[in-house]
Image (tube, rainbow, N blue to C red; front, side, top):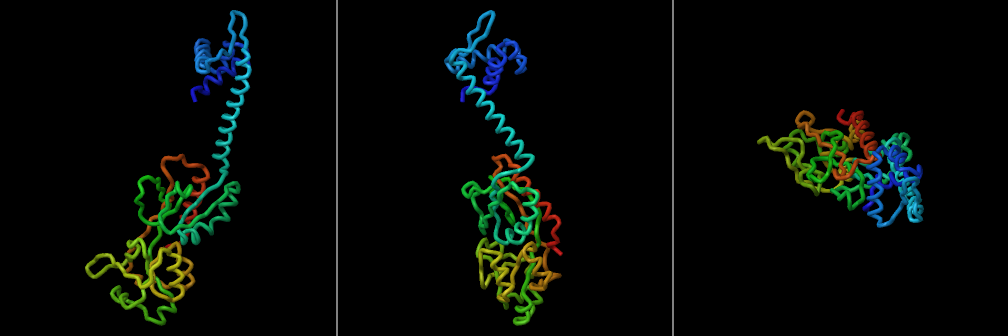
Length: 300
């Protein structure tokens, strides 16, 4: 667009006051600057908008028509600014959230009722993907990711961490026995991830001090699937505290190698594209989840 808002404001001020002097005062410019602004506008439009004489200032027919359009444009800009201000003070609109199934089920879903009470005008759309997604392609506003991040195009905000533990059900241990040393795991059914392989590095040490890498007898892409298999007594699993806290507290899952487990914590990040302004609806959701995570006793 060749025309600027400053030029439209100056022209509307002249149209409203009938005087360049009065218009200049209204738009906080000098008389000469206002006159130059009007001349520049007419040049861009290649149309005479005003008849200037020593005694009076009159709009041409084209000027009268353009005045109405200019008022409409400025009113639309004012409305847009008011709406954006309202969104900052009272967030509204659709918010698309993505997270792996375990985080969605065990962290986000339990917090939705409280969030909705605080922000009733936000329309939530929740999606679960076990792998990394393209936020723009999937039209996602914010995603929650567990573990290390590699995508440098994203802005990542740390919101917490969750400890890894090795677990099994009481039924499994009663049937197959409880391993006391990491080397004994070779004699047991191990449940792990099919991708990425890094998730099959358990928080135990080999005799030479290197991290223990396991080869799962049953593999899945979903931590929630592995959790359910462990609950069903199918094997031993290594999972994050945020998804097993209730299981451990109730005794459905029992921690193994309590004294030998290395304190390994998976970072949790909220991610969004850094080349976009952070909308208030995204900020308030991330802030709410972050605050709630800080109050959760996951690692007890």
